[in-house]
Amino acid sequence: MKTILVVEDDRLLARLVELNLTAEGYNVVVYNEGINALAYLQTHRPNLVLLDLMLPTVSGWDFLAFTQQDKNLSRIPVLAITALARPDEQARTLAAGAVACLVKPFGIHQLFATVDRLLVSIDDE
Amino acid sequence: MGDRDRIALHIENLCKSYAGANALNGVTLSLRQGEVHVLLGVDGSGKSTLVKILSGVERPDFGLISIGSSPVNVSSPRVAARLGIGVVHHESSLVPSMSVIDNILLNYLSGKRRWGFPVIDWIGLHKTIQEVLDLMEVKIDLQQRAKDLTLAQQQVVKIAKALCIKPSILLLDEPTRGLTEIDVSQLFRVISTLIRRGTSVLYVSSRPDEIPHVADRVSVIKEGKILGTMPADETNLRSVVEMLVAETSQVMALREADRLRREFVSLVSHELRTPLAIIRGYAETVMSRPWSEEIRKECLEAITSGCDRLTELVDNLLDISSLEKGILRIEQEPLWLPDLAERLVKAKQRKIQRGTLTTVNFPLDFPVVYADPKRIEQVLHNLIDNAVKYSLQGSTIMVSGVVDKEYGGVVITVEDEGMGIPPEHLTRVFERFYRVPNHERAGIEGSGLGLPICKGIIESHGGRIWAKSTPGRGSAFSFSLPLALELVENGSIK
Image (spheres, rainbow over the protein chains, first blue to last red):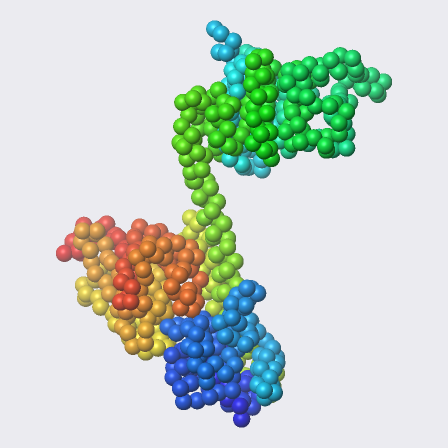
């Protein structure tokens, strides 16, 4: 079973993603803070990270900066959940190390499609 | 009285507005006979409007124009020409494919008509044009096409065109725009020749460096007002430049309005998206699978909660708008703050996610104040939420109240041990849509509306709100509320 790490401080959004991805057959691990999620990554290798950029204390940007430095962690694809919808803002997110952006308010089918696409592309490698 | 002291043109209290915006705001100016009077101003200062009014293109809303000593009504460009006002507009140009002479003749085609045909005194006209060009000491082939002329020559032809009506007053609107340095000196020679012949020139310009070369006197125009008139040789260029570029209150207000507009757009796109994502996501979820009754209920509750968040945002926007218009309703009644604080803290403590403790610290003999309980609750709710939002795990938030005898009121403080606010941002946090840059980077969401609303509410009660902070150590937000007078007199404050 593929594992997806969800880092999202908004409880309702985190639960939304967890509920749906679990129903799709994924193993979902949720953290509300970046620092705890980074600690989790020290011992686990999920197949995908869903990362909210607007996080308290350790922001999504800090999170990306940290994982990009580590050659093992940087291999895990990060899907950014963001309210930043402008193309230049999305480009900045991708430049920071995310492989794709999911812009709020996203629909669940969009969520599934993006997650599937990213996980399939890993299988191809 | 010498010729030079005679007034050729006098403008008194000229006003003009477009769609409510004042372009001219009571301009008074006189042009002496035989002088070059530079009217100096940046774009949008009203100088072009003045030229349009003097040339009969626009009508003033108010004010008086006199030529010599008699008031005149410059009702159209033709009337302006008849009154002896020649104009060179900077935006007008020659017809490129036509010859110099034909370009000049265009003036006359729109002139007097008899049986539908323009009446032209060809011999007299040619003589006039030749005289004008001789006067200007320039050699231009009258048959040459306009497009083959240099910019300076074109400018000279435009002036020649204006001079054909033999004006006593010549308005030059930014005549050097687009000209090279050599062209400019040629133009200045033409102007000085005209002056020797007794023409008066109102020279409209945005370039202070031209003053020493052409001007006898200078008037500085800004925001439709003449800031001052002085002889050119006494003009300190630097002070003129400073006068021109200093940001005025109006410009600053516009800038602020523009900032708020941009902030508002950014607020809407950021703050609406999370609750919208919740509503949309859970709604789609409910419909997507045959979930258990329990999960369906959970989804519907989440949708309700998303709606609540949107409602709060809309309420905040309405509050801000009411505060701006000064129509926020405050319904004052006796209020004992320790009760309110305790109730709020209890309610919040359950919701606090990161284990932050909140303690209340009020003296037992805390006096009653007259205030709107809902509004004060809103303020406390906001301040506590902020403290929670910017706090670290396990740190303490303290709500306390003291009586300030000197002030004659109470002071409530919400203190946190969070990331704090740098001093340069401390006063700005109460501005609408203002967010401390650090916090934005740290990824904490916020609309920038909460504190401005708190400020509005507290000030509507006659109180004050302020913040103290040490970056990295924490912040303390305090507000004061005055005590009702009779309470002070009855000795409730000991």
